[in-house]
Image (tube, rainbow, N blue to C red):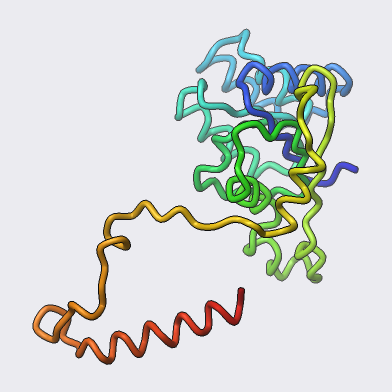
Length: 217
């Protein structure tokens, strides 16, 4: 089921490294000049025993919060720009605004992920800049490939991934508004002196936006 850029999601940093090791143990070296340069750079600037020194030669990188930011950002950049790097194993650090060219997602653990976080995770696949890239010449990327996988040693025996899928499809969740600005905002209390616009005009604009949002939902 692999594609050009494949992302494996787990929760624990230890599990991330173990899965990366397992994948690489079943892959032959697919090295190229670019991969050799990256491997050498990691060996000289991080440590010769850093796992990615060897993994990168097989087209794989892994990310988690225990890695120093500068190394993490370097590996993200290389995954994004080097075609030969086809596999990314990571945890929730990938949810923090990272925009990578991912074609395929494998979710092996959903512990600690509510519906919105899961949707955000799946949103890492086929970002809009990839969907509407003229070089693709089709809109197939509008249907992203997401796989929920039971994997020995990586998926909790009590995990109910099927229930998670049903929950996501139902769309049955509400926003938890924790923004104090939004909670205390009241357009009726606004006046022309502090906004430059009549409050009635603001209310009318807000009503129009609300109608459009309700229609889309």
